[in-house]
Length: 273
Image (cartoon, rainbow, N blue to C red; front, side, top):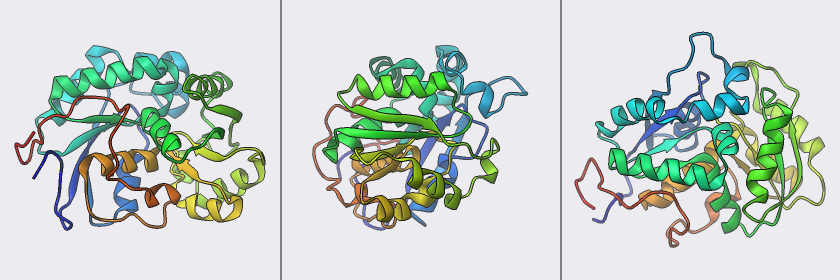
């Protein structure tokens, strides 16, 4: 068995490195693949009163990826029996830009000797697999205008035409946002000339709205936690299917892994490489 390959019944153990206080990938990743995914979370330390609206600003997002803050929690995950780790922060990716995000994730992967994938890099890979050119960005209400602009710049730097980038005016409390509200706002505010929609924000639990939005818009709909799971499945070479969470999962996950972050490293559970 090669690195990160699994039998069809094996559970994937995913480390989640995140600066966000709100439940996000640790809730949505297992929900999208019931019984097949287990998460282990390590949160990047922040001020005691930090909340989504505080760390979402670009200066806060950049601060949360400094070496001293990231390394401690990452090394805890590196000591665990995990298959790979995700760095779950859309805002950090936007604030850093693609090339710096790639460098940060690659460094983490080498440091903890485990494959690490991140949100925005995963989104770029997914959009390329879908052969998308024009995208609409939808963000949580705690993303400010500057982050919306940074999101446009991030994807623009990778060759995509961003036709819109806006924050949905929903509840500032992530726990109060329901998929129906995400569907209602997004379905009414996506331009006709967008080939696909990316709903960014790992604390923005929007995966439950994907299927209804794709039916209504007749276009691929991606979310931050969905693209992370898709990238995890690519690396793990698992045989199980993810259904009900978008067209993205219908694409061949056995295709070559190109332009991704981090080296191929040892599987901490099997010891293979």
